Length: 111
Image (tube, rainbow, N blue to C red; front, top):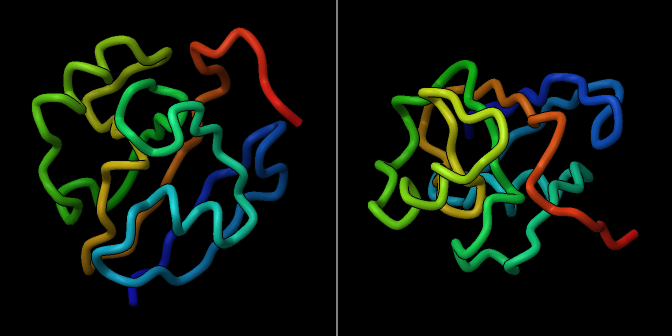
């Protein structure tokens, strides 16, 4: 099982995190299961961009983004060439390094 490293984020993961995830598991499910509370306002239906992550290492080991995901990503804050919606990105076999963007398009958050 590949290791997922989450870079420190001032609100969501202050110390960063590192954990193992099963190949084929959604990146969002893996993050949530290990206490990294990434927003997911549309409940994992690829209808928003609140679960946007930036893949700093291991991007090519993820499944290919669908056209719908790419269209949604165009709306994400801080979009990069290695951005993915974590609800759609499936863990591959290579280690991943993930950065959580500082902001999302959400104007309100639930605690």
